[in-house]
Amino acid sequence: MSIFAQPIEWDEQLIQRYDLAGPRYTSYPTAPQFQESFSQSALFRAIVRSNLAHRPLSLYFHIPFCDSLCYYCGCNKIVTNNRGRSLPYVQRMIQELSLYADMFEPGKEVQQLHWGGGTPTFISDQEMSLLMNATRRLFKFADDKSGEFAIEIHPAKVSSNTMAHLRHLGFNRVSMGVQDFDAHVQQAVNRYNTYEQVAKLTNALRAQQYQSISMDLIYGLPLQNQQSLRETLQKVIDLGPDRLSLFNYAHMPHLFKSQGLIRTEDLPCSAEKLAMLHGAIETLQNAGYVYIGMDHFAKPDDDLVIAQQQGQLQRNFQGYSTHSNCDLLAVGVSSISMIDNVYVQNARDLNTYQQKMDMGLLPVSKGFTLNQEDLLRRFVINRLICYCELPFHEIARIFDINPRDHFRRELQQLAPMIDDGLITIDSNGIKVLNKGRLLIRRICMVFDEYLSHAASKVQPIRYSKII
Ligand SMILES: C[S@@+](CC[C@H](N)C(=O)[O-])C[C@H]1O[C@@H](n2cnc3c(N)ncnc32)[C@H](O)[C@@H]1O
Ligand code: SF4
Image (cartoon, rainbow, N blue to C red; front, side, top):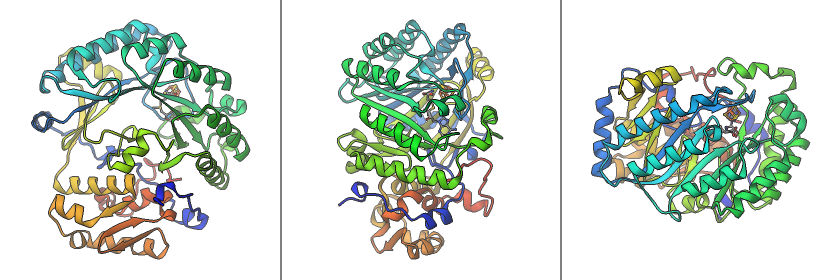
């Protein structure tokens, strides 16, 4: 039986021993390595290579506005009630997209589209049409059956009419932030969406023939406990989303000011948090969900599970994702693109973003060009985090190296993990065992050159704990 179909093996002692702070590997190298000295000519050359390879595109739009503040939020957002702010922003995103459209080959196909936030439905229905029609004018879209066109929604902040409008514009997937249904928890984090609202919206989305519904939950929120999380999970399972994300609440008030509004004494202790995670994984697996890895679950017939079986899964800024053959072009404030061998990040603050656009410049603030060693390590980390294995013959063939020589130091560092039953290593490669799945980030960290350069400085300030 594939490791992904097996019930998770829980070893509390091991989890506690290996649970260091570490990156989530939505990119490699991770964002702290991006450099302000990055030259845009590297981006232009990457776009030329993307064109030569005729790679399709995945487009991401970051819409940062929210009309209320969820205290736990670690996203890049702007809380405002001023709806007048959205049109000038949408216009600048269109302007940015037009600059890129001129650089990409004509007819480049968009196979994936994602509007994230913030709350993308903060913008009006007319502004949604404006943005989507402009995108369709500038790029060719895959059809509704093969393309994935998704939007993040806050279920209490969007009407079913707007969702029908979005379906009409071409969206076929929804990612819904549920977080927790418990009224006390909702109050403690200032985030409200009732079960009735979510159930009604979910039914409407099904009637509107959205192909996939995903729900986000968080564990470790204030006033949450095993019992309350179990009740939330049961309600979510009854609603039957195709995919589920269960995020570990990252409490880092030094980075996210609003988290200071959460009373530390209301936070569950680490033993309770671990028990919540354990219970949640068991409950979801018993309900028939496949544990894809880290924080993602999906129904066995979902595209994410199929992509994992067919070797087409990737990890990017949206977590686990399909369409690993695409380059990612991201527009809007703070968004990060991944094209060929470069990452580029836009200005993180709205004024700078808008000023650059008004000067007709690309709003890029940082970037990173991966060298051959970075590409190899990105491949290795992606392989381990998506498939729990690293076949040596594959990296030998693709990167023309002898993996045992090249990774001599790393293989030595992995030795204690073999003794602890997290992995096996033989002449064929590395296999992550069931017990190692929850600690996959810790296994990947061994291959992260930037962490090992920083030696013991594992940057606990920037990264949350693994579990
Ligand atoms: C990019 S956010 C935007 C979602 C959307 N605005 C909403 O609130 O429904 C995506 C998800 O990240 C998760 N999230 C946000 N802040 C978090 C934090 N501090 N720790 C863990 N997960 C977090 C939430 O589950 C949220 O739904
Ligand atoms: S969780 Fe979503 S709605 Fe809440 S503040 Fe963050 S981005 Fe906005």
